[in-house]
Image (tube, rainbow, N blue to C red):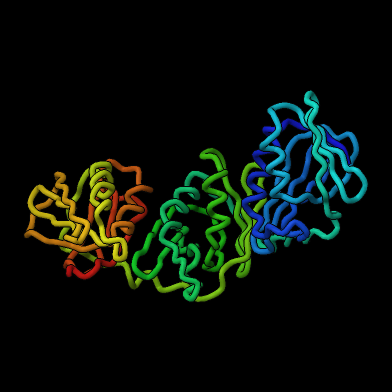
Length: 366
């Protein structure tokens, strides 16, 4: 195998491939990235046996072939080489030589034969398409709420389902819930599934905002295509909680505030929040929202910002991270918080209301 290509083009794709790899053992095939010349392109693959990644980049093929190289060192070499055209040449079955065309730099990297690289599964269900911008928004509005408690593995991913003409994503860790739906016509029914965050994070980082993303969903795997990328992932098994039971049917009171002012207040007050509980308080009265921490050995903080509210004075205790994270992923200027009682779930929504919301369970006031 021998080919030349631009460093910047290859570096971008090898960086993504290395994100997939979980093993750092140089002698393991799962630490290696598969490369194969295919006409005027280089096929690149990486896997951790759960998430699979595949793409193609344009190269000038001098001699066809295939091999696998240790991803960590391959990426390090590409990062260290100056910008420009690179030459890759397979030296026997166990080595690949990498060198810039216009510089006297030469790397020799050990390789493992390509026939030991795992085969990728093929989709068994039809693909459907949705705007990539909508899909990215759905991920961004839910992924941060996923549980990291491995004993509750069925909440370690984002739930994805079709309900009528809507596709829905939900994330929860048992103390909060993030929900978003999109009207997408013409999508065939598919089973409700739990998608691991790893493949969704790649889409957030690498997918643009234009065009479509193609998805194929089975009861065990999801396949995702966008641009030149083909991704697939094993799904999380288990029964996702009945999220509809958590969504309040109606809430008696609400107040709204400027999103940026709220984020700034949370950032400042959180400097003196007790680090074990992460508890802050929202004290709302007519026209004023007070964001404050409880008195501790370190001290206390309080900030008041204007809000729209007409009702009795109320205090609500919350984990500040649970309220900060949804405020960060929203882009709306004004945000409203709906509640009935201080010890019952609150709902965070944009103003005007859209197709997503976030639910948080309060903490004890004392």
